[in-house]
Amino acid sequence: MYKTGLTVALTLFSTLVSAEVSVKDAWVRGTVAGQTATGAFMELTASENAALLSVASSVAGVAEVHEMSMDNGVMKMRALPRLDLPAGKSVALKPGGYHIMLMDLKRPLTKGDSVALTLKIESKDKKLSTLEVKADVRELTSPLMMEHKH
Ligand SMILES: [Cu+2]
Image 1 (tube, rainbow, N blue to C red):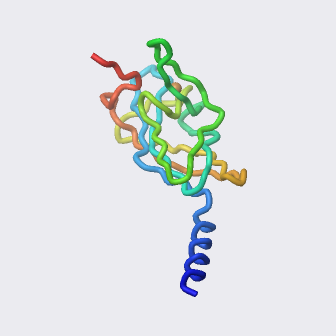
Image 2 (cartoon, rainbow, N blue to C red):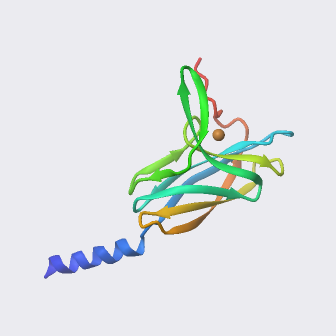
């Protein structure tokens, strides 16, 4: 009896949190005058398998999900069509790795500002949802996107 009750409770719970993605530590690197692109970073954890498909922000004409990797000693960035968010695993978007690239910036971003990002999420049953994220702008002295080793 007890066992049956527990199973039902767990099933209900997993239905309620279906495709829920939580966001931690969202931030955007501040820009200097004339700079038209910057990166947004955060930690994403999905309760069930999901994927980040795209991003939009009112401060940027173009926003893309990028991957940064070393290729023969050269840092390269490429746009990802989707970023998988495996259930229960936190996926870090951080300098030197995955990041959200904000391009065609419409205004300078300075410390204390906050930037609204809309993340388009696909659940494992292919349902689309959007996730609103507020990212704080951090100063330029935050760790550089291209991390240099000395
Ligand atoms: Cu990039």
